[in-house]
Image 1: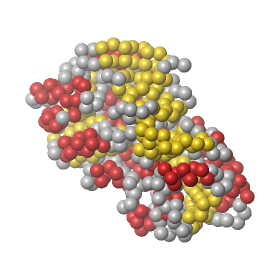
Image 2: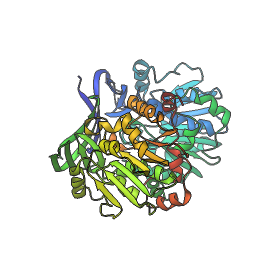
Image 3: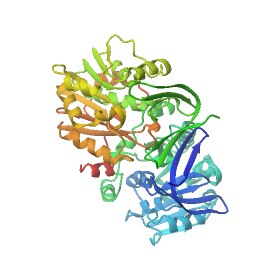
Image 4: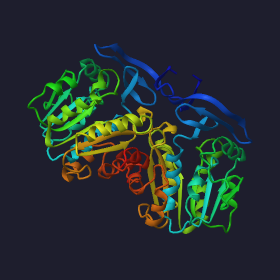
Length: 279
Length: 279
């Protein structure tokens, strides 16, 4: 058997995967990038020693980031994805025929190149003509944008360390809001309410200062090793539970996890989360 | 910093906890028992090298095993718990004033002794006069029982290896059913539908051959390292979503996770589970 690859959280808890083979290991201008093949999770993308996504469980993350927003936004013709270099989020976006343009802003071209080569099962929509990839810093992109508007914005940043840290600050969220159509919906990954409760709560407060509707939702992502993960649905209008039935139904059949009942269920918060958020 | 204590799943995935101190290490007639104090999860009970429960996340397991059944069964005067030597499940049962007798059948007295000494925050109901602990093999107990009837039965076995393996076989489930009142509800932990899908599906089939209503439900237990855990609600009558409102409300306030919306939400199954169960 191969060696273990461990991701360690705050030096107190670790998740280890048995490595069959290291497929890629390199350094871009921004970060260390690795792809390993594992026994339990299939191929795994690792950035700066942190597990990003795996063939085994990526659907749990990507469907949950994308489909609740895409099922509820009144319009979804123009979608912006920031981050998401593995291609899983844009794949989910482009499953919707109503999407006409999907702009993906990713700082690190090497993440996309490596994902195209080693994780072809995750990024299955790279050749979709509606996809427009721009290799620029998401924070800069949002700051400089003036007149672009999107119906849906999905933030698929890494973690609030390294080059992705700016994708968690308040001015970035405010910039995203400026780019959102008045009835638009933004969704983002918002870390774990269990092992990263402080960060989760801080993010909720930042979003609440900008949007009138801020609704965290929860689900499992085994690769992240914290037992539960969160995403957050944000808008100034609308309700996260009111899906557009026909659009939602069309997407459920091809989804590995997402369905109508799950959409409702993920927004139910356990008491420890409600109390931390004073809900 | 102390050493890591790792639990390994099928030699391909491991969850590791940094150990501050080993508080207990011994062997009963049945199994190896350890209690360690960890940085991330507080005190952790370990049996045969498998993490059983921790101070940090035990509520996620124990509330979910006990409260859906206790909130829906028409009567809850007599409750049987099989396993559960750490005391968390009987604590949840005895929070209900309607419970008049709670019989706990645990094979291994040393688990209870060790839990009483080292995990007093989990088993807070040991001195409740309604609790009747019997140190016998759960499988034998069920086989020999003739006229005892329970309103609710909770199966809190370990895993289908070692002395707890018999608590997963069909004759055991059939014996439990014989002891259940006609309108009674049984709930059990039923392993992970992610990393242990085969076992999960097998358990569902066994239960369906005995009960007309078999409903798995899902939630996180970070200590189990598989991203998601399952329990199953079984009965010949009734519906898992139809809670007895007043009884449920009385329990929600003192719960760390369980509430009305979460009760509904945990029964929503993702597509990969529905498809595996042909639902």
